[in-house]
Image (cartoon, rainbow, N blue to C red; front, side, top):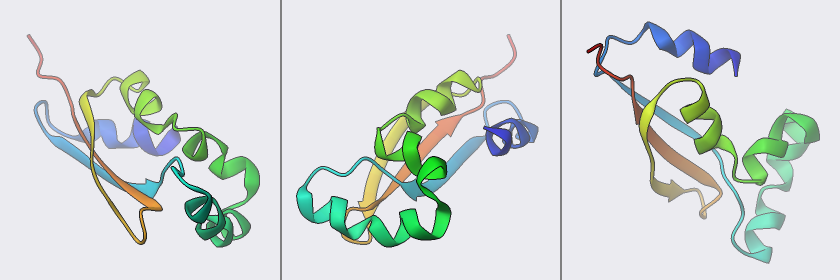
Length: 87
């Protein structure tokens, strides 16, 4: 969450792009994500594996949060979000 708050330095209308572990959608993906969990720690990856990252991004104040794709056998999700413009 700290990283999302630090990203708030984006100008209004600026885009935030994140590549991070996402929610596995198959048994193969759950196995493939195991090395990431060992490296980052089980607690540090819990929100990612539960699919909560888009909600955390929105809760940090960003809008238009979307998953734009998946890479590395579908384990890493690509997200895009926008800092809202001041009205």
